[in-house]
Image (cartoon, rainbow, N blue to C red; front, side):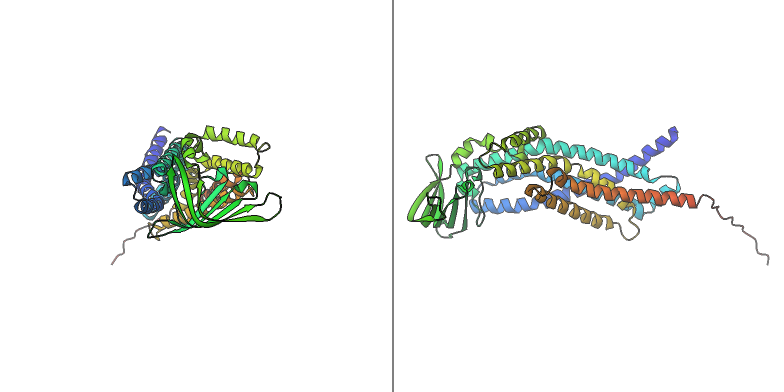
Length: 407
């Protein structure tokens, strides 16, 4: 018995030794691929706005935890497939089976490391990610304080002041004078009858500690006060609007506490407060949407880390199915599974935010689907191995007799 346990420990160490090199390589590759979009976007923005690249490096550092928590489950799946694929294509799996190594002997070490990675990813999601998101938002607001144009993106609705009922955007930037072209502003969006302004040009700057948007040559459409559907149209040559970005900056500690920058305990309390605030809110629809978003983020903090375990349940049987068709076939299979998982995750998130599915089911559905499929594959492999053993129980090794041929 002691000898058997010793053999199992040796086998577990051997499998994990095959697991870690591809895991580290896959983690680096997936992290770089995921962060490349942020790198390209921020680099382009910093070059256009003339901001020090030191802030770019700092922002990318704060983006890293959000990238790692996503790439870690991907790397775990690919590493399982590549390590077992290597053992299978080199006929080591056949040799192990011939020496009485069962399916669960191969599966348990990899499931164990998947659980460990899930716990590590959960720790990153609960501790590192909120701190990084908070630092990212704080640094971004500090940059905006010194360079207001950092917030500007062409043909993009800017929602920094959505809480105050303001949305605004501009179509393009004039290459000669640097002014924004075709500026549109919606004010009082939560009243149901917003005030709309449209100007040909606009500039953004700070005056007296306040962010001021100066509009040139435009029209303002303001609802009439008699509760009719009519609007009063006012033409202007120049108009200034206070965007209250300075007040936003001064309240940074409160504003930055979004669900993505909260720890699990904070987010749970935030969800409880939102539930009680729905009935007394002046904008119940907006409060309900915030509640759904917070609930989705709460369950996402658990579902994404435990994707490592779901991928482990599927990866082990899939890895053992890899034959002599090529060592890298596991990588292709892994990419396909990852694509399906994150597609389900995006669909589930959309359904959860829209209220078509409960947030819990929406976020755990990909794990349930992938994990259940992996369990079915494992049961099938265990069943095939048991059936093969039962069929061969009476088989005998053929006796070969060498006869000398007399000349």
